[in-house]
Amino acid sequence: MLALEIKNVNKKYEHFDLKDVSFQLEKGYIMGFIGANGAGKTTTIKSILNLTRMDSGKISILGKEMANHELQLKQEIGFAFGDINFYTRSKIKTLTNVIKTFYHNWNDEIYYNYLKRFNLNEGKKISELSTGMKVKYSLAIALSHGAKLLILDEPTSGLDPVARDDLLDIFQELVEYGEISILFSTHITSDLEKCADYITYIDNGQIINSAEKEQFIDTYRLLNGKEDQLNAIKDRLIAYKKNSFGFTGLIHTRDFDPSWDIRSTLPNLEEIMIYFSKKEDQYV
Image 1: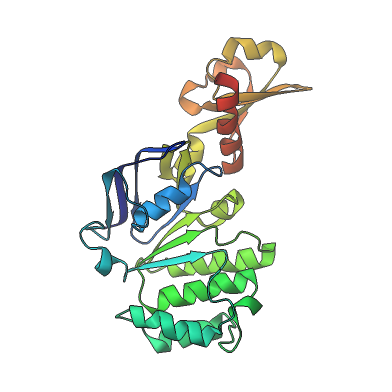
Image 2: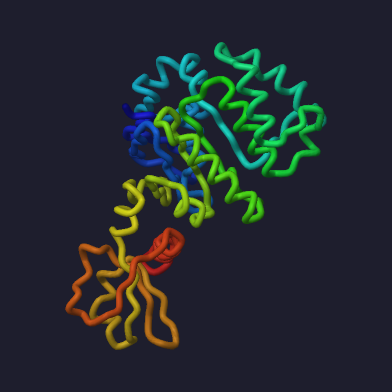
């Protein structure tokens, strides 16, 4: 079963368009959702949650269309983000007592187990929590009402490496038994290289690629060549940078010819994003 299916979603703003966005997430996996600031990640997430009305398209969660089953499906969705900006003077216990009234399947036993595991003191105020603790609190809330789809928007932003690694371990444990699925939006691509099963890349409102992580990376090659080799192949490159040794450029694997005698390596996710951003600068 698909945890999430997005088909041909369009949303037009004055200075930005979401254009035919389509991708799907299978149940029990983690999908990294990447793109530069302003690329369309937040608009897509708001469309999934029906917080913004799309102009056209269809969004289905656990096999049901969001437009027709919103109230039911929002019982199945958990949302965690890098900060909590509401009721910051309230204690955890006070905020939880308000939140849990909205969920039919709330389970206090599960909730207190997660508080214990995450070392959360329900007597603390939200404003007293670190960024990492706020994310863990959001996760505790989501998991205590039986959420099957977790949507995480920049959950590791601002965390130190140890706290980030701890959260990534938790995410992987959550999907281990195949019941929970995670859409993980972030600009920290190294986190996704550790934990994601799939990668979806959005750029300027359009999906560039959506695939299993290794397959996604294998779609591209990073070339390092001499300056006199650049003119012969630059029309095939997605983008390139000149340097003192010659050039470095990103190319689709299908367009790379091994007979060129140019060194090629697999790029990482960050390099793929960087060179796609340079594509707009070089070919406008």
